[in-house]
Image 1 (cartoon, helix red, strand yellow):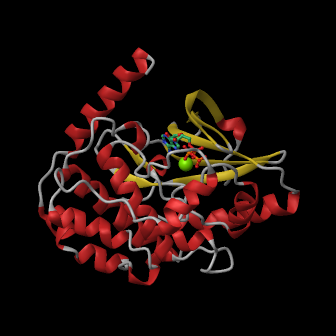
Image 2 (cartoon, rainbow, N blue to C red):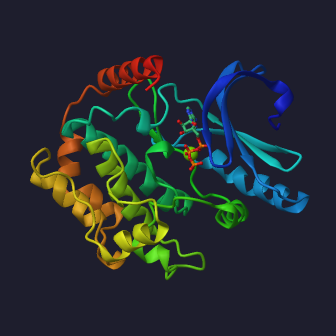
Image 3 (tube, rainbow, N blue to C red):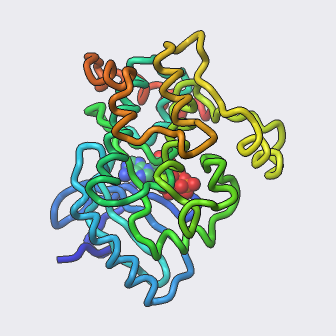
Length: 292
Ligand code: ATP
Ligand code: MG
């Protein structure tokens, strides 16, 4: 059985990315509301077939920290990818008020568990950790999406990638890792940046200008960003500083991150994530209504 466009009823737009629109759709045969992601790439039939085949292993990526995969297909030269609909959207929509530390701890815990699952169970490096790829639902669950499961797709995306690549680790800028520069440690860097962004409510680097050379210079030669010590505990700051070690070999592995006292504390703490998610989402809707 494979899923197809003919079975979908389009309900609305969830967001727009560099490569296309993400729609909210109703899948008539199963009566499930899904997110349908469009990836517009000028690909040939062989590449498209390869991508659909490679995406198939996602059916095995079943984890509470990973967005469910329902299937993929292509139309003309576009890939369409069906996944679990996360009704509160991505983390970038939840943070402008700045996130309290207990919430930040629980979010980080889910993300690290998701990343460890991808690495240990699926042998996948995420490659694109950032707030828009971390999704939240009304149950207060936090899940990862958009990870690099298909080599063919990774390659096409890397070739067409334009604009800001600002979650990229310093070592990736000169591509010293694998053939394409990605290693598991590069994901840990992006995780560190993402935690700070979510905590303070804005992208952590202040580049001064939009100049790409200034950006590269800040990431490669500047000090890594830090969590503000006046608002976050020493443990939280230490956790993030570990992720943002400029020497990639000094960044902790996921198992070590999970044993860090900050995450141990987050694991043991009782936090009403459902309540936080509902409030953060309500604030987002209010801002949307004001058009800000
Ligand atoms: P980029 O193209 O640079 O990676 P992006 O991650 O924002 O940026 P997309 O992955 O195309 O781009 O997603 C666009 C937006 O759609 C996201 O920012 C997110 O808010 C929303 N979105 C994506 N997937 C889902 C989903 N499964 N459920 C709900 N909203 C989603
Ligand atoms: Mg995305």
